Length: 277
Image (cartoon, rainbow, N blue to C red):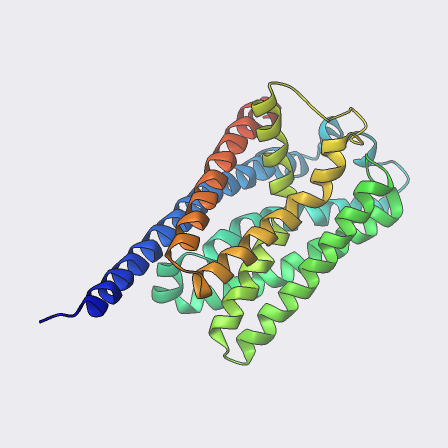
């Protein structure tokens, strides 16, 4: 006969396995939404910025970038701006592809070379951003300048660690650092998506000003990459050490994040990207 303790243990194991499945599916749902959103952002970068460059009409960039776009008499800054926009498109496409499990399993050669390209382009885009911030500043002044610079430092650190762990064949640690790199390197995308989600939820630009120094602007300048990074760290901790209740709670949080991300992607596509094409 099965004892009461064995029955309880069996139920706990079943509950834990069920919570693991739900957490995994929630993570997959968020990733699918994010991948589609980043694909839309990459398409916009190519259709607007890259197309204007190919047609020799880079002045059109200033319709979006304003005083921080192409500037006469500053060839070095303009070159770094173009480099940053070129690499941003590559990073936005390459990042999600690195995180698809079946791509890693079936196309390991592509995964490795795409990973190398992703790290190199993320580092290049960050270095270009450092130069542009130092040379031209940002629309929100020192608040956003410090936020962008901190994000760049995190990108460099996480990318270096992901590469180091891969070379050492510490695959689990490599994947964790790769995820961290993806989160902080996606800060530019998170900023736009989060901003539009906030506007839609509040039915207007609550806490936002035209000079991007409102309460929400200040919070989101840093939150656009620190908040996703914090959620990732919490997810990894709960997945490895949490009980069934904690995993179900984490799944709920990620589900809410997926809904917010989807709302922000919709707002960005309809309100920011399509109107400029």
